[in-house]
Length: 193
Image 1 (cartoon, helix red, strand yellow):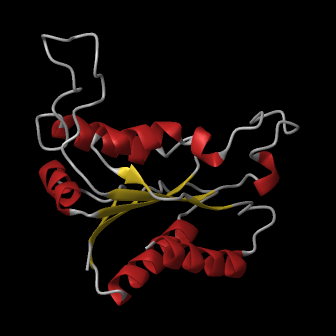
Image 2 (cartoon, rainbow, N blue to C red):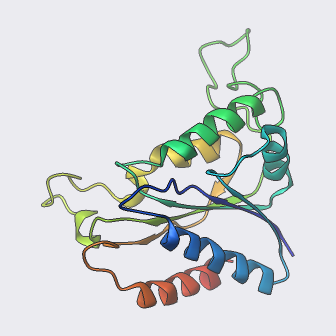
Image 3 (tube, helix red, strand yellow):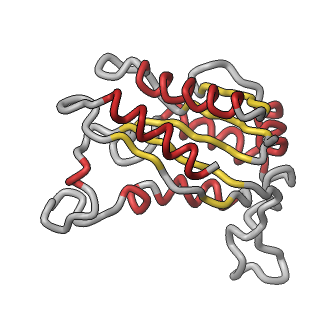
């Protein structure tokens, strides 16, 4: 049995009300509960208490992060959540400041994590699969999903969490195949947990 903290990082707007990300978050929660895991949740659009969120991160063996890709990153609500929670956690609960000391101020930046455990990023994207890992597609110029999401990986590494394979559902607006994506998602969870 594991302690799982599930974060829904979706920020609703007219084009994307959040039902798809909520469906994936609910599906993940059901998967973990069916395994006998204990699950705590946060949606970044809800009111949250920063100290409670720090406690959830400290409690978790696994952090599961569900989010759309918003303008090549995460939503402003998720960014605010990180600014609020990670920054407060630098007091020693999530990290020892930025990892440096006054004796070595030029080294070890980002190397003061306090947590251990794993995290998984699960994403929804408007872009097709073919837009990634393909130098012929000029906009992303060959970037992988994980390269695009590197700032989020660094945020989780900052507090000491190790990555599990990222999951992504592509082309959700112009060419969706949600039922097949749900099946792929279920398999991804089984294969990685």
